[in-house]
Length: 100
Image 1: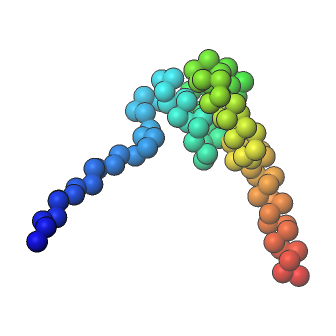
Image 2 (image 1 turned 120 degrees about the horizontal axis):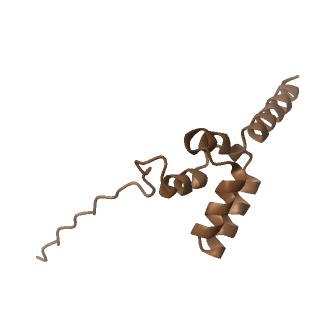
Image 3 (image 1 turned 90 degrees about the vertical axis):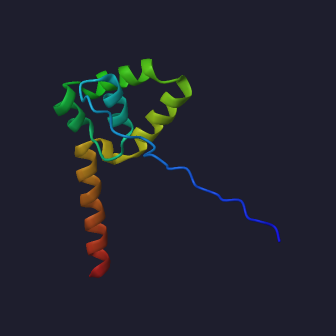
């Protein structure tokens, strides 16, 4: 009989762990990529406005990655708290009308 090779799976780590220092550039880039962290939250933590975050992302990322990030941020309303609240209100109104 053939013996089986033992196979152990590697321990996987979190793909994007949160950097410890919230004032670092790494944390800012991590937060900008995170879907549930709004630009308002980033401003509270670091004092950087949305336009400053965009400038930092432009200088830190490769051009293709920056374009991908901008497209993602532009299409996701959740990155901007005001847009997120408006979209949630629209969703609620539509679903409420369906029940009538």
